[in-house]
Length: 273
Image 1: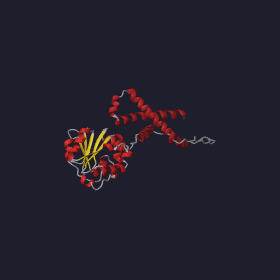
Image 2 (image 1 turned 30 degrees about the horizontal axis):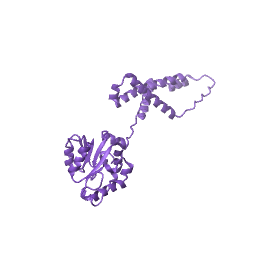
Image 3 (image 1 turned 60 degrees about the vertical axis):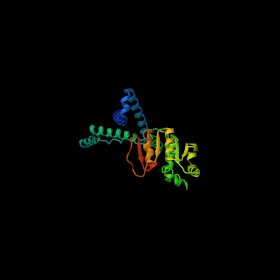
Image 4 (image 1 turned 120 degrees about the vertical axis):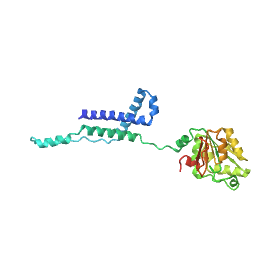
């Protein structure tokens, strides 16, 4: 009985290893081509050890079954035949069962893990380290500098994404304003939203100008990896100078350059809606 169990375990490990190799090859075809046979074997062996240890710890122990006492007398030929037939398992069925068990273990081990918002931000920004962004229509609910003379309100839906960007990127916010009071309203709104305390943004990185060309000039001087704006003219002007741009527009605009992307809102670009 012990030899049979050992042999079954060995066969299951072999089938598991073969299926694991195929699984990893499908997931990482490029990486495996660069690895030598020893590296692939080490990775597969480690994964096998981890999975089987985990499965062993999860599996409840089954107490050994007591053997029934033999009845006196010689059993009839028919009962012996029935007992023998009931204990026989076709080799093909056993092989299929082992394949299924190995596949289930691998599938459970390779269950996809949902990425965090931080991981999505870094992936979407292509690991960009510097970002410039317009305030009106992106971070603020107001849609024009004239609106900022009355009030400034941070959009609650964009706040989580904004804070994640400040964790991984050097972020500069900028806007055209018509007076000093508008500047104060914007800074107060950002401060009340917790942008300066919870994130990596400081007030010195919130820039104000008097014209739209002034904002474009800010962007060219800072040379960011990404610029985010709502003005199609600025997006078009900067397409030759900035690596990537995101055009925030309620109506999907025609793509003007391969390095220009578009989305209705900043949070929707990162799949948060």
